[in-house]
Image (cartoon, rainbow over all chains, first blue to last red; front, side, top):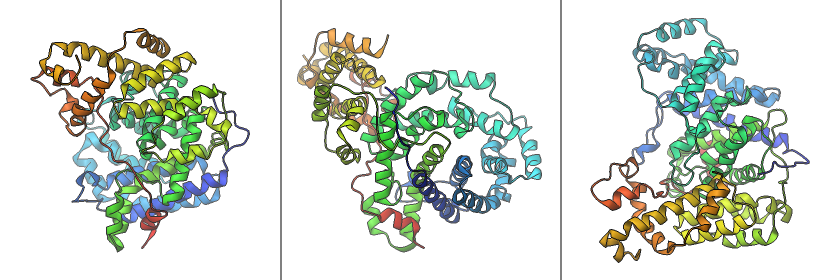
Length: 429
Length: 79
């Protein structure tokens, strides 16, 4: 997929305003959840402990500090930091570290990130060192993503550069192998996006990836199609970050995804996620409504802040217009005619594009069509799409390859099932 | 093998009745999306269930759906 040939970048003032919105949201999140977290008896999966917003808020201002040259950003970082400080180094946080030395770095994330921003506390560092010296400090089983997160936090604390242990973990991680785009779950996509954040230190260091950047970004583009179709703006936003965080030119797909997210954010007021249920929000009033809205939506609001912070770095803003290679118009018309219209806020954005911008999105639209047809189990349509894409030399995306493999597996499945008497009843034979 | 080569291999192979397979996946697949056991290879006992782990389940996440203009922004900002 070719890079966007941008003539002009996205308006910096708009990016800064969106980041300011996220930082203002962070002040309210600290006020509401830093002491006791959020408890949701009706949807317990939405509940979280205070450590979650504390850590995420610290990461947000750390990421935003890359744009501290802008006074309105610098002011807000300072305001949020002052609100965070008492919680980051509270008696409760210290006690948690003393009782759980294998988690001491996790509890110290806000302290370490605040220290990087200039809010140092040598006494806290001494205490952290004493916990970190415990024999049980590694006494917790972590997947490669968790291990790499720990290595990133430790590197910020000690100043050590990534070494052989990073490579070892990276080779075992989802960044080193093709992600299961169609059949994978959200936690695997999160592992992918979070690893990009840690391996670039939120854009503060050159990308440190186990595979070529172009290969990782091809997977990101296919993942973006999946999460735009699923209206999952939390993951869509994190996936788009891969371009500015790695310093790659924005692809047409990434530029379009960013445009969709800004449209949704402008309409809702905060970038929404699937956990905020509109019917419940309507029913609630007063403080309960605010608490529910903040508790379920702040994370996606932060994602927009992270994305804009990465985009505000020098030379990393998305293009104002979508531009790229031109594709066969007949094939593009076929793909557009194939698209389902049942869901996705990207659809009105697509209609609003110029013909040239829409044409540049042909590979993304092909991926979207494949995702939709797989979602509806219309595998015959997937096969036809792949055949036509192949005729036009456009079957290059990871999603094209993985959907072809899916159809091959299903074909094998049908053949295996011939001996199963129930398959006769299901029309497979 | 490149993605293009994989697609070509599929196109060159004999076509099967994907409509019938799609109906079956639609019938049996969603169970995996809501069953934590399904994706963890602990569905055992029948040939169908063992094979089903090859079939991608739909994601369990919820759609954002229709957005009321400004409502969420006002809700997070109100005192």
